[in-house]
Structures are given as C-alpha cells and as structure tokens.
Length: 361
Image (tube, rainbow, N blue to C red; front, top):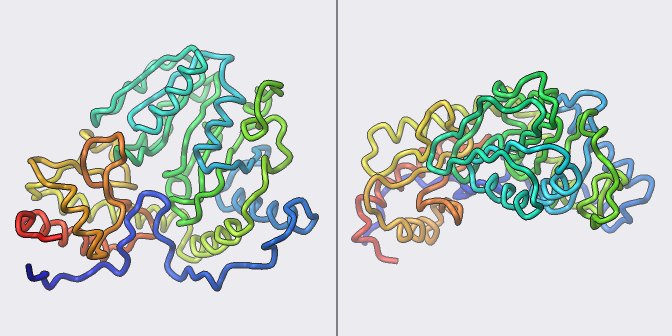
C-alpha cells in the first residue's frame, strides 16, 4: 500500500535504555587518551576519580557520601547492594514495577524478612505506616510500567533503617533528596544517553557504618572490599560519559532536563485525551512517570504488526512493552528525545492503527 505523507522522526530511537544519544554526540569526539591503558596506572586512576568527582558535583551529592563504580550497570550495582547490606532488618519493599519485583525475588531467595507491598496493575501499593526500624527498598521510576513515586515525601526523616532506591530513570531528571536516601544505584544509560556498562552506588555515612566485610561474597558483589573500582572499568564508556555530561550541562542541567521531560510527557498525555486505541497503564496521574510513558490498548490491536511496521520503516525502534509487562507501547520521554520526534511518532501510530489491516510487511 502507498505510504502516507507524514513527517519522519529525525531519530527513530525511543528505547527506555540505553536511550537516544544526545544531540551533538559523535564517535570522533571520544577522548582516546586512556584507551588501551592499565586501569590502575596513576594517571588513569586520576582521570576516573576526576569524572566521579564531577558527577558528585553536578548532582550535588553531599560531602561524606561515597560513590562506588560497579560492573553490570544498575543490575550489578543493586545485586551488590542486596548481598552486601541486607539481612540485619526487616525490609519494606515497594513493588509497582517489574524490576522491583525482580529485586524482591532475590530477597526471597536469600530468605530475608520482607514486608511486601506489591501492586502490578497500574496502582501504587501503600506507602503508609512503614515501620521506622525497617529498611526501605524501592524503585523511584519504573520504566516497565510508566509509573513513579515522584518524590520521597512518604519516607520519615526519622527512619532508622536504610533507605535504598534504584534511581536510574530519575537521576539527572529529578532533584534527588540525597539526605533521605542511604543507598542509591544508577547507571548512565537513561537521562544522559550514556553507555550501559557500569553502575554507580551512592552511600550515605549511615550506610557506610552498616557495611561490613563478608567472607562469603564474591568480589563483584562485595562493596566492603572495593578499591574505588570493583573491577576493570571501560575507559571507552568513561569517555562517552564525559561527552554526555558536557551536553547535560550545556543543555541547562537538572532544571532544563526536568522541563524537557515534563513537556515531552505532555505531548503524549494530550495525544491520549481523544485516542480511541490507547490509554496509560498507570491508573493514578499522581504516580505517572515523566519518563517513560507506558500505554496499553483499549481494544484489540495487532500490536506486533504495528511494532514490526514501525521498525522495518525506521520510524520507531524499541517501543515494545517490557517482556513481563502487559502488551503495550513504551515510549521514552527523556531529555534526549525531541518533541517533534514524539509528535511524528504519535502521527505514525495513529495512521498505523487505522490502517493495520491493509499494512503489508
């Protein structure tokens, strides 16, 4: 059939992570000075520590807090946290996202005492009456459901247990209240558009007091025995990170990133107001994420055919639902995504839904 005369997105990359590279990113801009070097050479250590210090400064992480670089992106970072810290207290784990559910399964395997608060139907589980002595475990923004707690107001300042959060899809977008969080984990692959090789663990002084050496832990999970790095870092990923941090600051840093995400979300929300095909998975606007939007069908649609059509024609890549989530469309609305590309995508989605029976692949 004849293709419509619709504007193509400048970039078809709408993945929730790794996300679209920022404008101006080019391979030739990568700093190649330390590629092929031993990671424990004095000048390489100085370089890596300078980048880590820059992250601390950009994010306004308080003095006395420590940053540790781990392998395996956020997953590796969170696994190290689970094995290195948890077990002393009962854990209130808040699950409204499939990644949080994954972490909760790890807690069960370790036979830890858990106060499970679970809801995977688009509603937020109860955030009330969390015992002060409990550790708290939650994902700030759930990319698999398009939901977010959006703030830490539900956490008491007097919380005695450790407050642990996966902030991967929130950091560099929200103003993170570091003094309310004892342990935070994130990677560079979301708001910054960086590579996904490494995870970062942010530890408060309170968390560092809890950290004890455990002889039973393998090296990559043992945060108590780290020496600024747990294993060999990718210096290519660090070079990529430098470009992404440069772009972040030139773009206007946190304030502008947050503004872009809010405006991108509004494009999707406005489009959905009169859309007969899709609706938000999130049932409460108070818990809508500003990155990403997860949309489910209102009626029967051949979503697989839509996804394939958009992919084959290089209109949109990687907008399928997370593998464990209901069938739907997941669109990253982060700060590296252009508004005009989102508008173009919604127009193509409208056309695809209306013409699904006539589309030939």
